[in-house]
Image 1: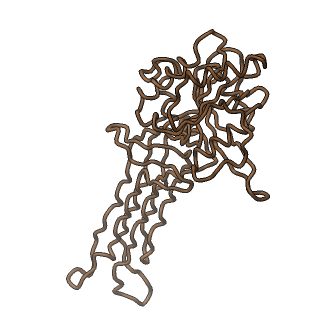
Image 2: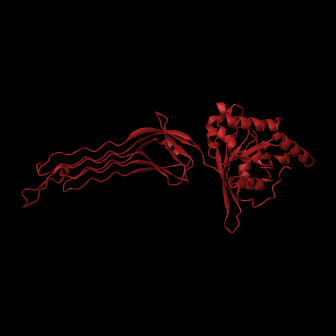
Length: 354
């Protein structure tokens, strides 16, 4: 289950109090002050973790508290520092202050650390206050309170390739065909209610030198999605983190609609949400070619390629079948080329429109 937004309440540890103590030892009648400092409180730290894919754990346990520092002791012994609370979060997590909405951190790389709440400093013991004029100080300072605040976490999936298109165009079937992901597949719209990630492997130049593509199956968009219709903004935000968009179109829609009109409708929704989405590299995939009789395919694909009028840098549409796997290797190679245009495709056997 993908949870991509939640609120957490973080509280750092309080610093330990400083100690008031005087040296008491046999045969030493005038022992001086020896009160130690309190230990610093622990901090709450969010860390990017590539093995974590959802905010579900934080949604279920939103209250996070670090350990407080120990109080100072006699013989100039400082209190123990409170342990930090280290919380793994998925890559692509945006940390906002709940009240103001200000963006505090963008955790996008493994091991990236963000101190969400800093622990309080420990108080000073009376040994710190001794002086020639104050040889027996009876003063110390209490430990400082740690930070306490509410944060809103928002997850934007990080993937190389985002699969977009209308509902029931076969995006989930395509993801199953090219990776080991197992999204739900059924013959009705909106079977995918949350994004799914899959890892596709392409052979490299040398042995064991595979090329990896992370693909995200974005739930089907509909007209008006940019204004919140359907799944709307809930999942359009996940497209922002992808580098390449694969626009999946039914080559012959079951509802009798026009594939070119469907393509333009989705492009309009992308632009309505963010003009930056229209600037992303795009590969157009004409899916479900296996449902078209072989003697009709060539003309149908030719007509579609002419009607689509894709952006100049999109390249020619690629004909695929997620159900049979036809053309999927060529599609992945086209995505790899779009990610690194300086590298020519390692395999050119894609069935492309001419």
